[in-house]
Image (cartoon, rainbow, N blue to C red):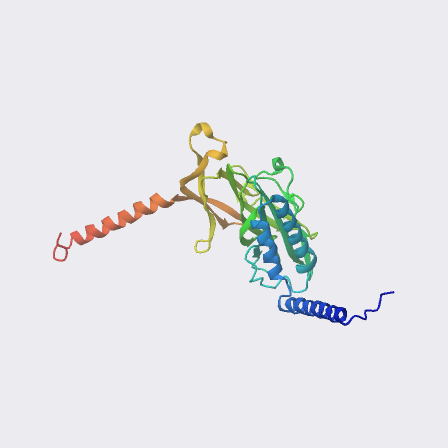
Length: 309
């Protein structure tokens, strides 16, 4: 049985504590009404993941972020269509057909390594399914020909989603970045295919190669350089730098690979990503500009009555 408080000062103190607690609960309820998908909380936890000084604290922030998304935010009705416009620190990609939505982020560690997290909202048979991606534990399994499930996720941070289809399947092509370590960086062209049993598949043989077809493309190069890998909507091409070692004796030692002056590309043709060789991007443009300028000057020189050197 609780004791009865008769002291007037103590009564006033308890009343104010109760009033503060009531107001705090009211403020929390009001905040949830104004921010039903807890975007402010998501950003707060993302800030901790990316900016705290200690790895153990990063792990704790990451665990809290993942738990919030998995248990409270993404299972909530309307999460698939919600814009999450205030969330700037998560990678959120949505497919044009509104069947797939990816929530993706990274955890940087003090030794230069990275951990990646991925959650997928998937529409199937009128329902929304939440898939927690499990990173691949054995990197030796990951090849450009391997087909993998959602428990063998080739983890990366995705920044572009391109949807293509053939007469049987829809393919969601992803462009991704992996900081890897302090010596080398990786980029990837990955593919997600939805299976009839409600699961997802990573990799599909839709990339044209010299021998057969590849299921994905993997690139690794020196961390001292940057590689261009982007989708050009105007040409509908996935364009990327050609990588080469500093010298022939370093072939296969990817810490010494760098982007050469040429670019390659994939364009969707005949139900596959067809490989094409592009011109030298930087030097080619310079040569083209000089050629145009020379032609223009030659044309003017022929008009003696107009042009006076």
